[in-house]
Image (tube, rainbow, N blue to C red; front, top):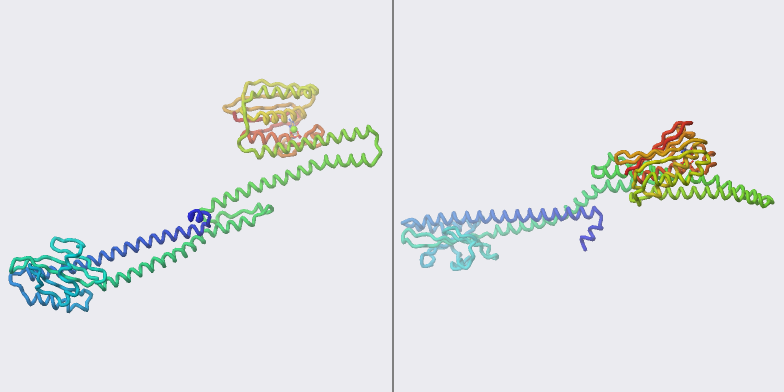
Length: 470
Ligand SMILES: Nc1ncnc2c1ncn2[C@@H]1O[C@H](COP(=O)(O)OP(=O)(O)O)[C@@H](O)[C@H]1O
Ligand SMILES: [Mg+2]
């Protein structure tokens, strides 16, 4: 639930949180490590101090003739003289019968000599056991057996080292570490938030720059150089997207302007003729004639609308269109049959032979051939010819529609695929053209990943080459 909440939170919050958790964990680990090492060092120092004291005492006891005054001085006086120092300790020496031979005054108050055995040794060093004392007493204890040189019996040395001052330091150390942990975490939250915000700044700037872009300022680009490396690609992709949108947008504007222009003329004609008809008393024949020509205009309008709908659909098609295998020559011959009457009228011969097979959308393919054949027949004079040449090259099929018609001047060639582009508007319109035929063919070739190219010589003829992938 919490993680889900974080997921929906801002990146700044998430970064700050993760950064703070990481810092908290790091400080905790370091604190534990430092604490552990300090305790270990202190333990070691205590042990060394105690074992050194044990050694000194053992050397005195081991001697054949025991130097009592020195031992007494060591046990009774020395610790006292050091009371003010850091190492405040008490010594006791027990004989083989567990009786006290010598002990520092107040040693019994600190630890009764039997208490030593009730404790769990910290570690056992051959002849030395040492313990950590109770928490409230804060002593470290050591006990070592030693052979008395005179009696050859085992005596024992017991030492209690007051480590209250160490405990005080450790407690202070504790508080300092806890303080560092809390402050460090707060600091990490603050720094993390600051860093995350600074890191996200570019993103906010990008957002602001994006907000400023409107339909009229699509040409505005974001300068990718001023962004950090990670956002450079985003800025570049964003610019490319803007470019694409701008192109589409201007195409759409152009298209709607053309559309309005194309539709205005037939609609004006319709209005004009209808108004004229209404303003006069007309005969039945006149009515029939005007309505007939109006119907023709309406047919043209319908054709334009149909074509535009088709273009819009084709351009918005996803990559997946329904394809099926077709026999190229068979399909083309079917369309030629449909146009036979028109061809016969002009004495135009058409011919096609091939056994090439294509995997295409058959409706779109028919529409392509239909448009191109209609153009070829339209712009070919009497007694001309229209030929289909089909070639299979590697994994591609080339279909050429060649005519010996009026041809196209070079300057028009690059614009032929623009919507509503017609070379001779009046004539094209007369022959029922809308200027959308080649634009439709081009968009069909695009969805099939094919290409279209036109070469032409005015007065000699035109060749349209369709290059289909198989
Ligand atoms: N085979 C051809 N021979 C000569 N001109 C052609 C041929 N095909 C197309 N054109 C020219 O290209 C223009 C655009 O063709 P198209 O997009 O089919 O529009 P439409 O046929 O409706 O005028 C035509 O107006 C015509 O001038
Ligand atoms: Mg046409």
